Amino acid sequence: MNAPETRSVLTELVVLSLRDPRAAANQIMGWQLGRDVLWTALALAAAINTLIFSVSLVLQSTPAMPAFFTSPLAMFVLLSGVLVITTHGLYWAGRALGGEGDLGDVLALVVFLQVLRIIAQVAIFLLMFISPGVSVLASLATGLIGLWILVNFVAAAFNFTGLGKAVGVLLISMAAIVLGLSLLLSIVGVAAQGVLLDV
Image (cartoon, rainbow, N blue to C red; front, side):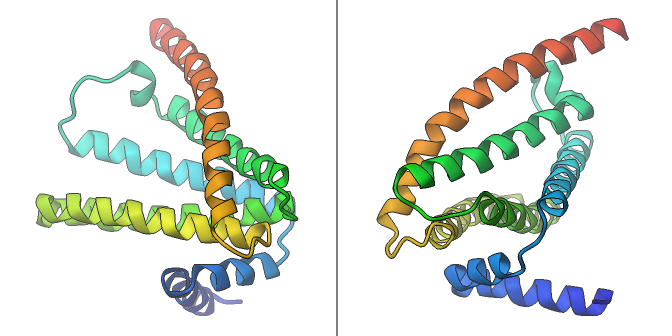
């Protein structure tokens, strides 16, 4: 598949995700991508998110924040860890509630959600220079739409007939994500402080 065809497929899939997220999820899972490809794509998504975050810090005046937020390497490790924890949290929570999902399917959907997130972040970042107020509203709308897509993706991944169990998966996995994130923040924070002190 060449570049124009890839862009066309991606555009159609983005539109489908907004119109019928469950159908989009089924299409993504139908690709049956290998785990190695998906984990690599997840790492790439974390790297791009780190780049966007780092550029926004440089271009915008921001209040003082913990040292690891200003370290691109620490941010990359943090974001990668969050994505891995999220993927496993959703998978095990879904299985606990009787879902029939596969880890590869959940991983594929998390990767595509990151693609959507990156597109939204770039659009909001550019909009910020045109109209800061509108960019804030766009950010809130993006968050709500992203949550709706995520719930439907989870329902599709585990073959849930309704969205109730999908919401339950999110609530259960959220607890695991918070615990994992707390541990990860402490590790990354200490590591980043050590790097900065060495410099």
